[in-house]
Amino acid sequence: METRVGGFSKLILQSVDEGLAKVMGEDTAKAVKFYVDPSIAAKDPDRFITSIRKMFGKGTQTIEMRILDSLYSKVGLKLTNLEDSDFAQYVEEAKRQYVHRILAEEEPPKF
Image (tube, rainbow, N blue to C red; front, side, top):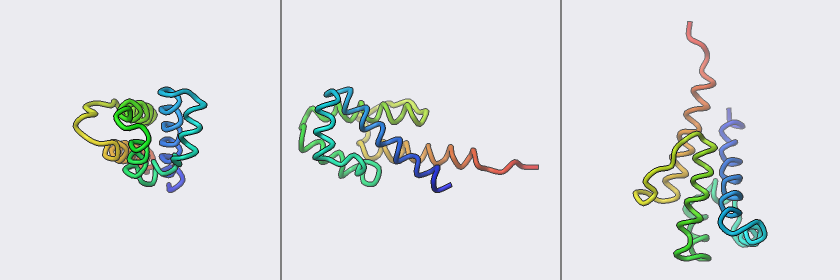
């Protein structure tokens, strides 16, 4: 199961790639990823978004929204009320839902 749960890290990495590229294009997204390691988003989403905020200031909200929209879509969730929470909380909720779904799929049949 660890491998399937670890699949969430791949989803967040893909979502970061997609979100950055949608907002600023592929070339600029590559430059940003040179300075801010996207793998941090899976391990420490708060640290990741703090680094992005230092780079982009007020423009970060659009980047956050694109990343989270991509992530939630991949997990099968609908993104709502972005103002009510922060990036790390949204990532943690997506991870919780993802893990819950995997565990439900792996439950043995009940007789």
